[in-house]
Amino acid sequence: MVKMAYRLLTSPQVHKLRPHEEEVLATASKRRIAYQDFDIQLYEWPGEGEKVLLVHGWEGQAGNFAEIIEALQASNFHVLAFDAPSHGMSSKGATSLFEFRELTGHLISDFQTSYLVSHSFGGVATTSGLYELGDYPIEAYVLLTTPDTFQERIDSVSMQAGIADNVKQRLIRIMEAEAGQPIEELGVSKLVPFLKVKRVLILHDLNDRVIPISQAQQVAGNWPVARLEVIEGTGHFRILRTPEVIQRAVDFLKAEP
Image (cartoon, rainbow, N blue to C red; front, side, top):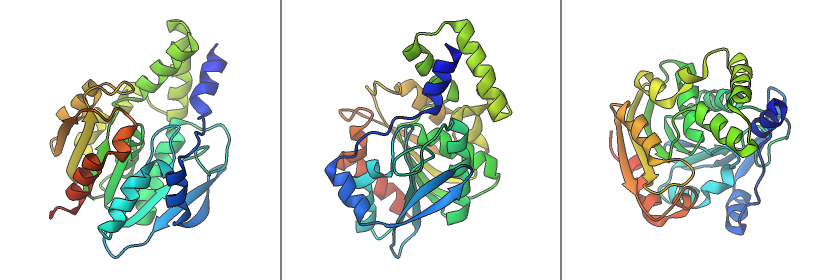
């Protein structure tokens, strides 16, 4: 049972993109980089403004940001995105939440960007990646829904696989050995007070069925520079293509420091 749950945790499904998502990706400048055991797909939409890095969620991909990419382009931002290991058009193979985190931190530093947008688990990857970078400065960061901990992903997979608590604890020990630290220390709300981020906006649907609003509230409550705006009617995924939400995110990024 542990092996089955571990495979679920390390084998993200690749979901088919919508036609419009494919169209937007087709307009990008593309290149691939080697990272650990993967070939990572990078996307770039040049603009004269600030660089913005988009970080998708677990089992997501860069194309999920299609409408946001268009809105950022219209505001002349320089847009950057990527497909995480074993996600989207990047090469496939067993991966982990921690490889996602490490790649995100690497790209933030490599691109020298100070503006960020993440969705879902991308918020965990981004905040923990920033924590690993130390005092790396970020001007503005928008989180479109955010979980709080790696533990929530493990709980979700354990429930999906129907494994008992004692088996889940064995799975947690495996993950902690990979991370080199206890799982509870990787909570977003535990890390964010130490990040060098000037402005943070969290947009989260009140009735999100994937990540409860309580998780975003916990993160916002521990992040002095963060403002949580609760929205309704978008759910967990439609939030990425809801015009009012997109406009709010872009306006926040454009705001003067």
